[in-house]
Amino acid sequence: MTAAEFREALERLELTPERLAAETRFSARKLEAIHRGLRSVPERIARELEWRLAMQERESVLAAGGPPACPAADALRRRAAGAAGPAERLALLEEARRHAERCPVCAAREAYAAAHGAPPPER
Image 1 (cartoon, rainbow, N blue to C red):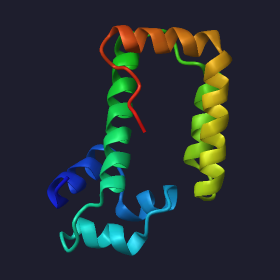
Image 2 (cartoon, rainbow, N blue to C red):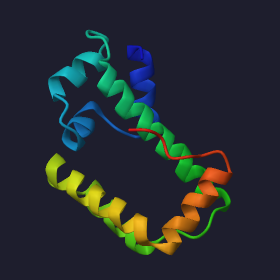
Image 3 (cartoon, one colour):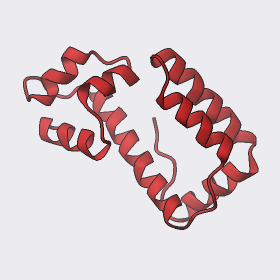
């Protein structure tokens, strides 16, 4: 991933380097340097952004015609987005993952996404 692709990914995800740093364990200084083209993009940061872009595409497929969203899963994701730090965010996302494993609404959405070319991305 080039610095230009990094900036484009942040724009598509509506993220700033500061927000990405707050949501992950990546250094804000390192992300700022990448954003300005002063550093190359490490593989793990590129993978994180590619995963987020794939999830964004997956959500678009589901929004365009998939089964209705699961209110419980949506609430967990909103809580994760507003988490105080990476540890809390990761714990809430793990809780959302466990919920999805046993929820019939989430299973129906998963099946729809897989059938319409949007399988879950690898992380």
